[in-house]
Image (cartoon, rainbow, N blue to C red):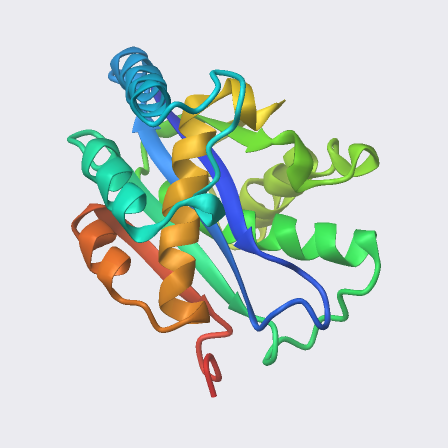
Length: 225
């Protein structure tokens, strides 16, 4: 069975008055190499903490890294088998009103759906997609909404235009990011990519670029204007 794993985190904030851009990054890991990548992620994070005298229980956050430490970590993270997908939202150009938590959750789900849709297009034989997200990404009451939303948008709605629609299983897992090293990797990469849009810092984007297999700016027509 063709199965894919996505480790997802974001940088920036949804909502008015919280900055212009919001970025979601997904690290794509094929199930055939998942075990080795998970082990490598643990080694990289633990060795970095030990070298820099960071307590073991302290979560690494991309926003807290200086340029030297960020470069050091990216050199270890960007390794064969790692693929990066991301989408960045221009809040100035969106017509969505993001004042309430339900509005933000709907927007978050929509952006995740755009990433997953492209995975399905790129992998027509895909049968299962596992999504691992930070517990803090959504409110507790909204955690059950993503799975049916993906199924409705990416499976059921296809019945309107296609004769044969393949069933795809979506498994959503919410984790404490401090206990999932690959979500911490996603956070570091998301924050590094975010710098390109938030502060015009291209250095880290250029370092990550060879590993990017999908990038999208939303809305595409008026992004950045």
